[in-house]
Each structure stands twice: as C-alpha cells, then as structure tokens.
Image 1: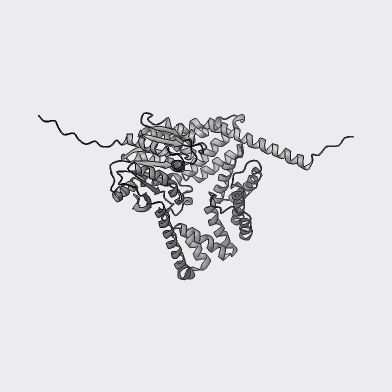
Image 2: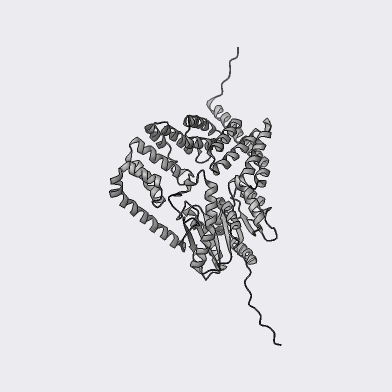
Length: 496
C-alpha cells in the first residue's frame, strides 16, 4: 500500500520559489490591468469630488472577475479622502478595498489610519492587519516593507499600553531609520515617544534632538516631549543652549552646502505670513529672467546644479523654492514634511501660492525682469507646479521633469493645463517608471504647437537628467528662447 510521497527539503524550496514567482507575476499582471481600467477616470476627473464619484461607480459596477480593479478603485478613493482631511471616509474606503482584494498599499494606509484615529477597537484592528501584512511579505516586498511592517507592529504594541515590549520590537529592525526609508522620520518620532514611556531617557533624547534640530526649533511636539523627558527646568537651563548650538551648526552646514554649489538663500513670506525660503543659484553672467523650481528636500539642491549651469549660460537664473515643511520653509504649524499627512491638498495649494511671492523676491534680489517667469516641477512636485502656473498670469511657461504626482491628482492637473493653456515642456528618462505614461497623458491637454514632450535616453531622474545628458540643457533653453524671444532694437525711421 503506497504512502504519500513528501518532497525533500530542496524540492520544497524550489516549489516555494515557483509559487512566489507565480504570485509576483500574477500581482504584476492584475496591477497593470487595474491601472489600465482606472486610467480614464483618473485623467478625466477635474476635481477630487468628481474623481471619488467615478471611482466608487467603477468599484460598484465591477464584476467578480474584476475584483482587483474594484479594490484599487476603493484604495484610490481612500487616498483622495485622506488628502482632503476626511479620515473616516478614507478608512471606510480602505476597508472596502482590502475586503475585496488585500493589496499592500491599501493595507498599510488602513493600518496607519486606524492607529491615527484610535477609536474603539481601532488599535486592535490595526494590529490584526499587521499580522496579515507580514504574510503578504512572502509574496511581494519592497525594499523597506519588512522594516516598516515591523515598525507598525511595534507602534501597535505601544498604543496597546506595552511600551517596554514596543521598545524591544523597534530595536529588532535596523532599517527603520535608514536614510532611504521614506518613513524614517515617522519612526524616529514614534521611537522617541516609546522610549520616553519605557524610561529610556538617552534614546528619547537622541531621537528628539534630531527632530527639533531638523525643524529649526519649530517642532512643538518634539519640544514638549523633551520637556517631559528632562523636566521643564532642566530642559530650559541645560538642554536648550545645546539645542541652539546644534541649530547654529546645522545652519552653518547649510550655508557651506549652498556655497559649494554656488547658491544662496532668499527669505520671504507667504501670503499668510508663513516663512518661505528659496535657494538662488549664481549665474556666470547677469541673468534677465527666472525659473522657479519647487523642492521638498534639502538633498534636492545639488541635483539642480547642472540644470542651473545650463540655464545660467543661456541668461536664466534658477531659484529652488522649499515647499512648506521642508528646507528653510518651516513654522510651528508646518515643521516637517510629515506634518502634511491628512491635509496634503491644503498644503500643496498653499505652496503653489507661495511661488508667485518667491518669484517677486528673487526678481528683486537678482534684478531680473519681474513681468514674466517659468515654473518648474520635478517628480512629486509636478502637480504643485501646474497649480502655481495657473495662479499667476506672469507664468509664461511650465517645465515638468519626470512628473510623478499622486495618481488622484492627474485629472485636476489635466484640467488646469487645459484651462491655463500655458506652454509646457515635459521631459522623462528611462529611469522614470511610470513617468513616461504620465507625461504622455498630460501632453494631451496642452497646446502641442507651443509645448514639447521629450524622452531623454540618459540615466537619472528629474533634474539629474541635465547632469548625464549633454543635449538636455540646450534643448530646454532653445525651447525657452522660443517662448521668450529677445527684444529687438527699434529701427530708426527712414529720412523723409
């Protein structure tokens, strides 16, 4: 009588790899299918309310065979609600999404939303989802998914009143604070809170110090935590001078960094008084006009150096404006990029409104023509640049480098481009996964006679294309010359 034949260990590993590969291929195929099915609604919806209505209709009408499409529609609906500050509606949408099909992005968003809301049973529900998320890592895991899932497990322990266990759990993941992890500063703050509750004063101080210095003393939550750790008098008398010295050191480092790339800061105020900082690059000869770019990280300045040089040789000055909450654009109401969470729409519109004032300040500082300028958006700031371009009639041209805006913003971007009719230069590169499709879609809403869609063959993303592609600079500046032809001298009238 024959018994069941069990595979050997090597065979088991092979079978598991085959199953994992099949799962990855299936996920890739269904994701592509969902994107194709949702693309028309995303690009055709001129505002968030219209988009959410269209996505819910798609999700409701989807057949069982199109469950992935329905799940993605609900996930995007949740993202749109979250950006508008509608937390309950966002959570409800993400719940509908993972009930249909459990995708990593929607599940992470739902866990974070439940932890943030902390209603009855929210933390327990979030912790249960984290365990499901660990199982999904076997099929599909990005570079930091394992670490961030461990972080969510740890934070759930803390929210459940188990600070000591949470501190030990945080320590198990070494990649939480890696510079490349997009959630690194979120975890730094949560580790600080956990360490303080667990009685680890040294770790709490280390995390808080970085948060406070990064925000140039504007992060009130981190400052209050420092007071809790040290006690009010000790924080004011002993630690405050140390923090001020650290801030001065950071400011000097910033000045040295900018000097190395031949740039300096220009300070200004937004329309509501918010302090805004813009980095102005030097030009080899006096410039006549300005290009105002938008950045969300101080690391981006050096990436603009080759573009600044190309523009400078053509008589253009490049200024890179820090979005609110980043670089030198800091205040108590917005001390960090993470403070945008749940109010992205509001902060993006405020940053777009700052661009016109940044141009006025730069034009005055560098003695430039103040009647017209160019707005530039790169990767994630593309949607902000489009909004800024339609807010100010002085914007005569728009440049989008590797545009990768939130998918729920595509329709509003397209509507603004079509309404504004601003000549637009769109450049993408092979490293831009998805940006070429976004660029092509947006190009359908601009005037093709005045605009350009360019696919560079060089490496790099965004402004880095100008460092590796020697033809990129002349190509852009020649297009700008068409938009801003040089003024010709008036001929004298012929003698009578």
